[in-house]
Amino acid sequence: MDVKGLVPGVEPGPGIAGRTLGRIGPLEARLARDDAEIAAAQEVRYSVFYEELGAGSNRLQVLDRRDADRFDAVCDHILVFDQSLPGPEHRRIVGTYRMLREEGAALAGGFYSEDEFDLGGLISRHPGKRFLELGRSCVLPAYRSKRTIETLWQAIWAYVLHHDIDVMAGCASFHGSLPATHAEALSFLARNCRATPEFDVSALPGRYVGMDLMPAEAINAKSAFSRMPPLIKGYLRLGARIGDGCVVDRDFETVDVFVVLPVKEIQQRYISYYTQEPGRLAA
Image (cartoon, rainbow, N blue to C red; front, side):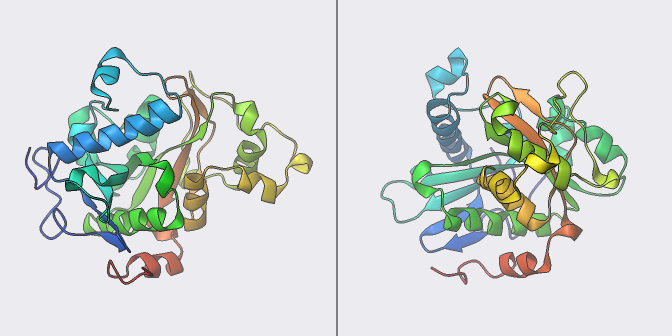
């Protein structure tokens, strides 16, 4: 595999492929460089998605103990390493995030989230804008902390700047396949965090599940926010908005919502924070 870029014919560009994109203390983030690092990231994903959270795996995944699909080969993979751990570097991976640009999606026949949401329709309404799909967010239990998330976001922001991305988008998940279990949080998102018409995305008609499950007077904003997964809360703080409808993913046993984050909507204080040189944040 060409270590210059995981998308055949599409290189990340000089100065990004091998360099550190985020660092806080012993945590360091950069792009995967080779097959061994991608395979190790897939093992981390398997550990979290299948062994911890109970996603349904097929026979090949069980044998390999990896979460892998056809999109991995056309994505860039941001990896977070704990450099204080012993052993080879690819065994120090504690978190990962998958980046799929339009060049890679064209080779894969579309974006991953297009099985659930009309992302293609959104892109077609914005010719000339560069879209980035983020997915497969995964952090080992012992590293689910503010430091790890901030290290990831340092790297994501460096990636977005390097590729001149205009819009970040992708699915974010609630654990469990019953929307009613998340009624307050989903209803809050539907009533208070919907995307503007310019950037709205709907769940596909055959998979659409309404999110507005509770009357407005029954929703407590503080309680609803506390019940959201950290990833969704983090997106909302940055300025992201939520698409129309959710989707039940039976394979991963999740309820998925669609997150849209135009780069121009990111609050300036976050831009200033994540643009700092890696390593300058608190160790």
